[in-house]
Length: 311
Image (tube, rainbow, N blue to C red; front, side, top):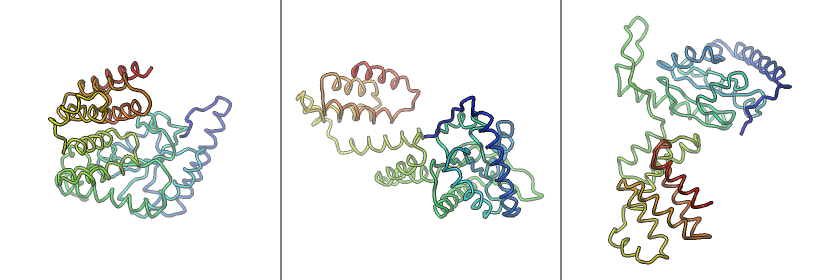
């Protein structure tokens, strides 16, 4: 993980180094031709709204969060510029130096560089946090553009007008991340394995994506409960040593919307067990936590109770 702190003694050196790299990058773009130069823009906090948010209303904007101190940035940024330039204006590449504009990175919860995010209609729709080969990058952009096209096919009035045509209505929202869309489609078809794989792919790119975490936790919950017999679970609960019965009972409570009861049940198991059984219950509870949004009041209460039970 990159360290975004800047010691005072290095402040000037970092800024000067970043400026030098920015000038070199601009020269490289101009040498590569007008397609690259016109598709790539250096963004600051002052220009973020116009260069990213406003432009994303009609054209996908790829944000490259980079730093002159990150070796991965030196590897990825030139490849990004080349691939975006080859798309002939279908995508804009916005470069954000996290050392110069840390507030942008903070606002979008960027924790490492390089990080790449795709913005459309003012919202994040996809991204990744590592250096990827050119072929994989081209595939990712192709999938991104396909998702945008699907959005326009479903919302024809939202498509940007051609030259000379009147501006249509602003669409209500961006298309879904391709993996998120695949997960939803798989759930609709009853293919829970495919849905889980899609959510896992999304989390591999964006580990902090709350919607993917909730989706995967929900799919796993369905998997565990879909064949459960509540009467058999109730019978097994008579044996205090049957930890699995307690966890499955909590799953059933969770699936029925009884979140507080489910959390309290597992926390009680944590309190009275030790060793592997305790760790198993704790990990199961953390998995259930992922099924709720981070600001859910039941989740906050259960986290406090778990901390008290553990320590």
